Length: 445
Image 1 (cartoon, rainbow, N blue to C red):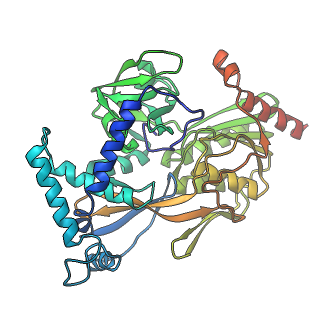
Image 2 (image 1 turned 30 degrees about the vertical axis):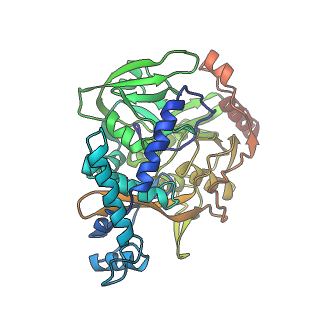
Image 3 (image 1 turned 60 degrees about the vertical axis):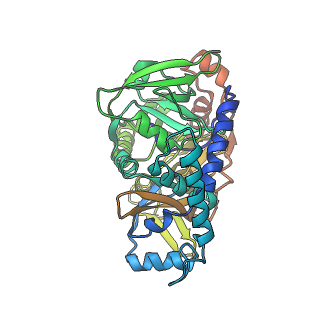
């Protein structure tokens, strides 16, 4: 998916000349954290849960809370105080007075124009930051619509896959072939510092994505830091319709099939089925499934893809805050009868970890490469009455054998470090892929 919210990790620590930017970010974070609470009560005025995001994994879910139920829930946890009370709970009289006082100080003495909508957004962001839920986010109506539209497999953008690295920078982890990003000269591991001359450090990946995307035919300028180059690069891309190619495949020597899945979307299910069918028609004897740097997608997609290979049984299960369990199963109609190697790395996350864990637990595959990311918690998207929404962590998921991988990741059965020096010298050489092929050839002799 183009420029979407992926994982907060990079294959190797990046060092960017950005101390001043970091200081400005921390100052902004302090202000946001201070001015919290007022708008949250407005958000309780109409709640419909639309989908769930399990560390990059979406699943449909319906919750029938009424408006009064939502408001009551807010009172019970101390957001607005009890009925008939205005001086208890999180938003008490003292807090309201302090917020108004701070606002008046800024209105009177600040050299900057104060935008009330920006302040309201800051209050919401600040409250979410104060919950300790590092995956919690607030979405404007436009941001929420963009998020849902991106699941369709086509959108207007530049064709770059982004994640946030440990320094908080949006980093490119992949480029779509023949995309505006490729034509503009962007490369994997480029770090985006500005979009149209606006500093984006400290912004969420969703906020950065919304700035990069736009109408077809319009231009966006990205300022990037590239390893090995001392100065920043300004790269212009003309936005276009991006139709995601989420699956690539080929038949290699010895009857070893290769399928790379870059993300799990609606279009991925059909693309994977077509790739697998093609390889089977060529008398495939072994299969490499490449999930390196695949950071997630639709739960329905990964379950459907697992069903193309697994025997009848459990693919994954989730448990919510109250311990309620939900199972997702395969039917076993198309069990794959060839040895499988799954390639993983530190950016293999969420849906990719579900597929890896399911294949492992069913004895269908070995994993090879390096340890996966380890993000196994579930976020729920909540759509509010005004069309905006928020995301919060509500569930955890487990592999069929009950492994909780959040914060742990999946250790490879066969560890093979990626030889980046050889790859950058000759991008046709991939030592991890070569080791997987060698392993399978030995298996099918």
